[in-house]
Length: 407
Image 1 (cartoon, helix red, strand yellow):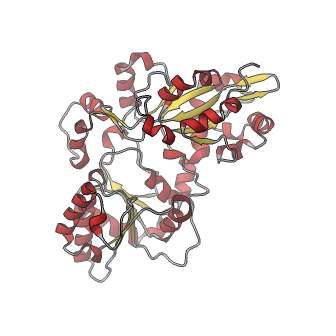
Image 2: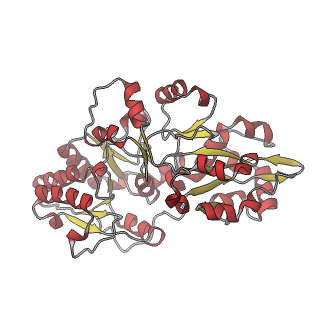
Image 3: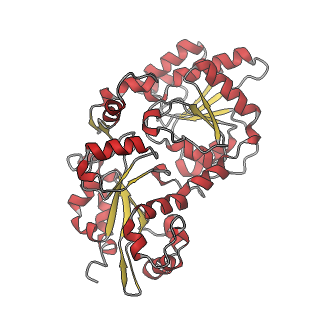
């Protein structure tokens, strides 16, 4: 399914101290991608086509739209006409930059000038193109993934994590054991939403690699179910927000992966987050994982993690995750960041105000005229064109997406 050399990234999964020049580390991070290419037809039905801004024709003026996808090169080859009405912004559901030279802009995951400079020097053919920090992984709808009214906070600690090597669940298990030794009067349990389809009454129904990780947890905890509630896949839109809302805190054990959607979801549901200081450290540079006031960092050490969990749980009402998340992230901020990254829009949208394009009246009127919904509604999925999934869906709506070519 993936492309590239994953083995070059494996050392980073459980070792926070890689002794290499930073340029070599950046090359390792870019050595593997989860993008979708034309020689992977078995993945065509999973292609995402997020329309951040639809093409517009209003008051005699044509404005190109923006779509972003993990399959920009594939989409461009299958539907070359789209480039006449859209700017393409490519993202990778992992740690590296996109491999698609055809894209008009690239996701950089984080604001990291040093890595951005390396990217431009390494790929001079792309040096003039915008790199955009992907604040909203998977385009989270912060008004749907939001706090729910639940009877009580009956989940001490929540992890949304596959049982796989990059999630470092064994080190969380060690932290749980230390926590109970230090605070026997305040025992806690971790609830893991695993994303796996398995029989909860038969742990052996996990796939082989997940079972191997679980065996490590068993070795650490002896009786892991005294410490952990392990759950299978749950319905994303109907059940996930309630699980987040029931939790007192969220924990992530990874050292290397993509931006991590669950961190954003937890903050959006007003849950303080805990992760390692070293999480995505080479990709981030000095950029934070989350805004100040949304959670705490631990060192990559089980005792530090245990102590950090304790501090967060004892002081959880002092955190304001959702406030901080919406202040700095969310779709509206993401929209402004993306539009501001293209000089084209500053020159073509009337009454343009950097940092506040989402409130541009001309754009709102144009979207309403062309698509019969407001700009805000379109941004939050109010049109069937807002998010298409799969190549067939793109083809089905091709006429609606390219109707302005002849104008």
